[in-house]
Length: 234
Image 1 (cartoon, rainbow, N blue to C red):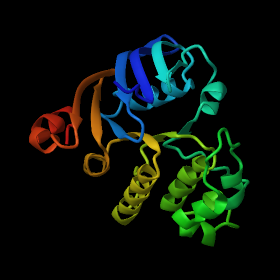
Image 2 (image 1 turned 120 degrees about the vertical axis):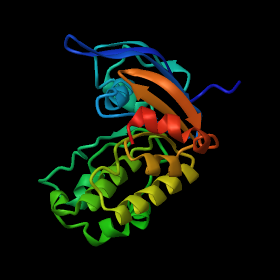
Image 3 (image 1 turned 90 degrees about the horizontal axis):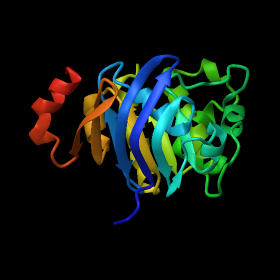
Image 4 (image 1 turned 30 degrees about the vertical axis):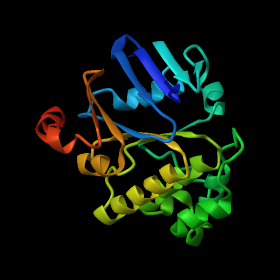
């Protein structure tokens, strides 16, 4: 058996006294695009933050590229090759587009150059001198994704990249994510847009109440639409 790039077992996480994750377990192979699906409050974002060590009160096992990361600080984990794109995007209002793109440090060789990022996101090149927060919602999402591509990370954690975007922009984000996968990047995607997730992912894990309750491959989603819709309430 080939060792997965990311293997999570028995992951527990807390915010203060609130116990959020209850033994979450899943794995992702190199080059896969896997989604975490679930309703609001299911624990999806907490799972991403726990994988990266942003949620510090956690236990269980998170193995990345064969090495255990629980107990290590988030900056060390990021340097192993993980990058997180938060739902709120985190654009720095005092910086223009190009300054936002250049801000994160490169943690590993192999990250995209500025020219490659502009080729992937032509809108950003046109707006490169604009203040980051003056962009449209779709352009801000492209900037948030583009910014982590310089780092050299080979596992991207994307949190709700289509939230609040117009359908035409959602379609463009889907095209970009497929291109990133084609380049060999591994992607863990948190998504509530069921139709978007089904169109881009290899496999799906379904979360409820801080637990993984089901898993489906892209090939058998259509046969399990009723069960999936019941989980998601769509």
